[in-house]
Length: 229
Image 1: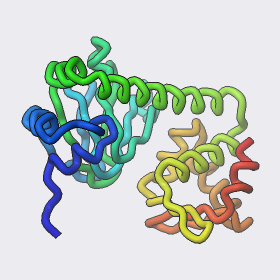
Image 2: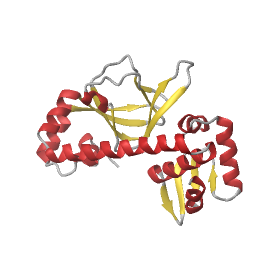
Image 3: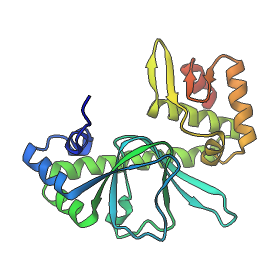
Image 4: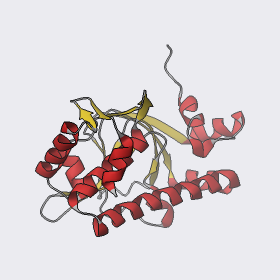
Protein backbone atom coordinates (compact mmCIF):
# COMPACT_ATOMS: atom_id res chain seq x y z
CA UNK A 1 0.00 0.00 0.00
CA UNK A 2 1.47 3.45 -0.86
CA UNK A 3 2.31 5.84 1.95
CA UNK A 4 -0.57 8.05 2.98
CA UNK A 5 0.02 11.67 2.00
CA UNK A 6 -0.09 14.57 4.42
CA UNK A 7 -3.31 15.80 2.81
CA UNK A 8 -4.99 12.40 3.42
CA UNK A 9 -4.29 12.69 7.15
CA UNK A 10 -5.51 16.29 7.25
CA UNK A 11 -8.79 15.32 5.56
CA UNK A 12 -9.38 12.66 8.20
CA UNK A 13 -9.04 15.08 11.10
CA UNK A 14 -12.53 16.21 12.13
CA UNK A 15 -11.62 19.87 12.52
CA UNK A 16 -10.90 20.06 8.76
CA UNK A 17 -14.15 18.35 7.76
CA UNK A 18 -15.99 19.95 4.87
CA UNK A 19 -13.05 21.87 3.45
CA UNK A 20 -12.66 21.98 -0.33
CA UNK A 21 -9.66 20.50 -2.14
CA UNK A 22 -8.31 24.01 -2.70
CA UNK A 23 -8.68 24.94 0.98
CA UNK A 24 -6.99 21.70 2.01
CA UNK A 25 -4.04 22.36 -0.29
CA UNK A 26 -3.68 25.79 1.33
CA UNK A 27 -3.70 24.16 4.77
CA UNK A 28 -1.17 21.58 3.59
CA UNK A 29 1.24 24.32 2.53
CA UNK A 30 1.16 25.75 6.09
CA UNK A 31 1.86 22.48 7.88
CA UNK A 32 4.72 20.05 8.40
CA UNK A 33 4.52 16.34 9.24
CA UNK A 34 6.99 14.45 11.42
CA UNK A 35 7.37 11.08 13.14
CA UNK A 36 8.32 10.93 16.82
CA UNK A 37 9.72 7.71 18.28
CA UNK A 38 8.31 6.07 21.41
CA UNK A 39 9.19 7.89 24.67
CA UNK A 40 10.77 10.80 22.79
CA UNK A 41 9.90 14.40 23.77
CA UNK A 42 7.89 16.64 21.48
CA UNK A 43 8.42 19.85 23.43
CA UNK A 44 9.69 21.11 26.80
CA UNK A 45 8.56 24.06 28.98
CA UNK A 46 11.63 26.01 27.85
CA UNK A 47 10.55 25.74 24.24
CA UNK A 48 8.14 28.59 23.49
CA UNK A 49 7.41 27.10 20.05
CA UNK A 50 4.20 28.95 19.28
CA UNK A 51 3.05 25.85 17.38
CA UNK A 52 -0.24 23.94 17.30
CA UNK A 53 0.05 20.17 16.99
CA UNK A 54 -2.39 17.66 15.47
CA UNK A 55 -1.88 14.04 16.45
CA UNK A 56 -2.38 11.83 13.41
CA UNK A 57 -1.19 8.43 14.68
CA UNK A 58 -0.05 7.08 18.03
CA UNK A 59 -0.55 8.49 21.52
CA UNK A 60 0.89 11.48 23.36
CA UNK A 61 1.29 12.23 27.05
CA UNK A 62 0.95 15.80 28.35
CA UNK A 63 2.47 16.27 31.80
CA UNK A 64 4.28 18.48 34.29
CA UNK A 65 7.05 17.69 36.73
CA UNK A 66 6.56 18.12 40.48
CA UNK A 67 9.35 19.70 42.53
CA UNK A 68 10.39 16.22 43.73
CA UNK A 69 10.65 14.96 40.13
CA UNK A 70 7.33 13.09 40.01
CA UNK A 71 5.23 13.35 36.87
CA UNK A 72 1.77 14.89 37.01
CA UNK A 73 0.03 13.61 33.88
CA UNK A 74 -2.48 16.13 32.56
CA UNK A 75 -3.91 14.14 29.67
CA UNK A 76 -3.41 11.23 27.29
CA UNK A 77 -4.19 12.00 23.66
CA UNK A 78 -5.09 9.74 20.75
CA UNK A 79 -5.32 10.21 16.96
CA UNK A 80 -7.32 13.26 15.88
CA UNK A 81 -6.58 15.36 18.95
CA UNK A 82 -4.94 18.78 19.20
CA UNK A 83 -2.34 20.00 21.66
CA UNK A 84 -0.23 23.10 22.20
CA UNK A 85 -3.50 25.03 21.97
CA UNK A 86 -2.68 27.26 24.96
CA UNK A 87 -0.66 29.41 22.58
CA UNK A 88 -4.01 30.48 21.06
CA UNK A 89 -4.91 32.04 24.41
CA UNK A 90 -1.65 33.98 24.63
CA UNK A 91 -0.09 31.31 26.86
CA UNK A 92 3.17 29.56 26.04
CA UNK A 93 2.25 26.25 27.64
CA UNK A 94 3.76 27.19 31.01
CA UNK A 95 5.44 24.17 32.53
CA UNK A 96 3.96 21.55 30.21
CA UNK A 97 5.86 18.69 28.61
CA UNK A 98 4.68 16.51 25.73
CA UNK A 99 6.14 13.14 24.77
CA UNK A 100 5.18 10.21 22.57
CA UNK A 101 3.90 7.07 24.32
CA UNK A 102 4.40 5.04 21.16
CA UNK A 103 5.51 5.94 17.64
CA UNK A 104 3.53 9.06 16.78
CA UNK A 105 2.85 10.97 13.59
CA UNK A 106 2.36 14.68 14.22
CA UNK A 107 1.26 17.54 12.02
CA UNK A 108 2.56 20.97 13.10
CA UNK A 109 1.29 24.42 12.19
CA UNK A 110 2.52 27.81 13.40
CA UNK A 111 0.14 29.84 15.55
CA UNK A 112 -0.31 32.79 13.09
CA UNK A 113 -1.10 30.39 10.24
CA UNK A 114 -3.62 28.49 12.36
CA UNK A 115 -5.30 31.72 13.46
CA UNK A 116 -5.58 32.72 9.79
CA UNK A 117 -7.30 29.38 9.08
CA UNK A 118 -9.82 30.06 11.85
CA UNK A 119 -10.56 33.57 10.60
CA UNK A 120 -11.32 32.19 7.13
CA UNK A 121 -13.45 29.26 8.29
CA UNK A 122 -16.35 29.80 10.75
CA UNK A 123 -17.15 26.06 10.54
CA UNK A 124 -13.63 25.16 11.63
CA UNK A 125 -13.89 27.71 14.45
CA UNK A 126 -17.11 26.06 15.66
CA UNK A 127 -15.60 22.56 15.56
CA UNK A 128 -12.59 23.78 17.54
CA UNK A 129 -14.91 25.32 20.16
CA UNK A 130 -16.73 21.99 20.50
CA UNK A 131 -13.41 20.20 20.84
CA UNK A 132 -12.38 22.57 23.66
CA UNK A 133 -15.67 21.77 25.40
CA UNK A 134 -14.94 18.02 25.25
CA UNK A 135 -11.44 18.57 26.60
CA UNK A 136 -12.85 20.60 29.50
CA UNK A 137 -15.31 17.81 30.30
CA UNK A 138 -12.46 15.31 30.52
CA UNK A 139 -10.68 17.51 33.06
CA UNK A 140 -13.87 17.97 35.07
CA UNK A 141 -14.35 14.19 35.28
CA UNK A 142 -10.77 13.77 36.47
CA UNK A 143 -11.18 16.44 39.17
CA UNK A 144 -14.47 14.86 40.26
CA UNK A 145 -12.78 11.46 40.62
CA UNK A 146 -9.94 12.92 42.69
CA UNK A 147 -12.34 14.78 44.97
CA UNK A 148 -15.07 12.19 45.56
CA UNK A 149 -13.79 8.68 44.83
CA UNK A 150 -11.47 6.34 46.70
CA UNK A 151 -8.30 5.07 45.06
CA UNK A 152 -9.80 1.83 43.73
CA UNK A 153 -12.77 3.66 42.19
CA UNK A 154 -10.38 6.17 40.59
CA UNK A 155 -8.37 3.39 38.94
CA UNK A 156 -11.49 1.56 37.75
CA UNK A 157 -13.08 4.80 36.51
CA UNK A 158 -9.93 5.52 34.55
CA UNK A 159 -10.04 2.05 32.96
CA UNK A 160 -13.63 2.70 31.82
CA UNK A 161 -12.70 6.02 30.17
CA UNK A 162 -9.49 4.55 28.73
CA UNK A 163 -11.46 1.71 27.11
CA UNK A 164 -14.24 4.00 25.84
CA UNK A 165 -11.78 6.45 24.31
CA UNK A 166 -9.13 4.16 22.83
CA UNK A 167 -10.67 0.67 22.69
CA UNK A 168 -12.28 -1.38 19.95
CA UNK A 169 -15.17 -3.72 20.69
CA UNK A 170 -15.58 -7.19 19.21
CA UNK A 171 -17.86 -9.99 20.44
CA UNK A 172 -18.58 -8.06 23.64
CA UNK A 173 -14.92 -7.54 24.60
CA UNK A 174 -13.26 -4.12 24.45
CA UNK A 175 -9.57 -4.32 23.53
CA UNK A 176 -7.17 -1.41 24.11
CA UNK A 177 -3.51 -1.20 23.09
CA UNK A 178 -1.45 -1.26 26.29
CA UNK A 179 0.53 1.91 25.61
CA UNK A 180 0.36 2.98 29.29
CA UNK A 181 2.46 1.43 32.06
CA UNK A 182 1.13 0.70 35.55
CA UNK A 183 3.20 3.69 36.69
CA UNK A 184 1.50 5.95 34.11
CA UNK A 185 -1.92 4.85 35.40
CA UNK A 186 -0.75 5.56 38.95
CA UNK A 187 0.27 9.09 37.95
CA UNK A 188 -3.10 9.63 36.25
CA UNK A 189 -5.15 8.43 39.23
CA UNK A 190 -3.10 9.84 42.14
CA UNK A 191 -2.31 6.35 43.38
CA UNK A 192 0.76 4.11 43.62
CA UNK A 193 2.09 1.60 41.10
CA UNK A 194 1.52 -1.21 43.59
CA UNK A 195 -2.13 -0.21 44.11
CA UNK A 196 -2.68 -0.16 40.34
CA UNK A 197 -1.11 -3.61 39.96
CA UNK A 198 -3.15 -5.03 42.85
CA UNK A 199 -6.41 -3.56 41.46
CA UNK A 200 -5.77 -4.88 37.94
CA UNK A 201 -4.89 -8.35 39.23
CA UNK A 202 -8.05 -8.41 41.38
CA UNK A 203 -10.22 -7.41 38.39
CA UNK A 204 -8.57 -10.11 36.28
CA UNK A 205 -9.20 -12.77 38.93
CA UNK A 206 -12.89 -11.78 38.88
CA UNK A 207 -13.03 -12.21 35.10
CA UNK A 208 -13.83 -8.54 34.50
CA UNK A 209 -10.63 -7.69 32.60
CA UNK A 210 -7.65 -9.44 31.07
CA UNK A 211 -4.28 -8.04 30.06
CA UNK A 212 -0.88 -8.88 28.65
CA UNK A 213 2.12 -6.85 27.49
CA UNK A 214 0.35 -5.61 24.37
CA UNK A 215 -3.35 -5.27 25.24
CA UNK A 216 -5.90 -4.58 27.94
CA UNK A 217 -9.18 -6.49 27.45
CA UNK A 218 -12.39 -5.39 29.16
CA UNK A 219 -14.53 -8.54 29.29
CA UNK A 220 -17.41 -7.15 31.36
CA UNK A 221 -17.78 -3.42 30.77
CA UNK A 222 -21.11 -3.06 32.59
CA UNK A 223 -19.72 -4.62 35.74
CA UNK A 224 -16.62 -2.45 35.50
CA UNK A 225 -18.79 0.68 35.21
CA UNK A 226 -20.78 -0.39 38.27
CA UNK A 227 -17.60 -0.77 40.34
CA UNK A 228 -16.44 2.70 39.25
CA UNK A 229 -19.50 4.46 40.73
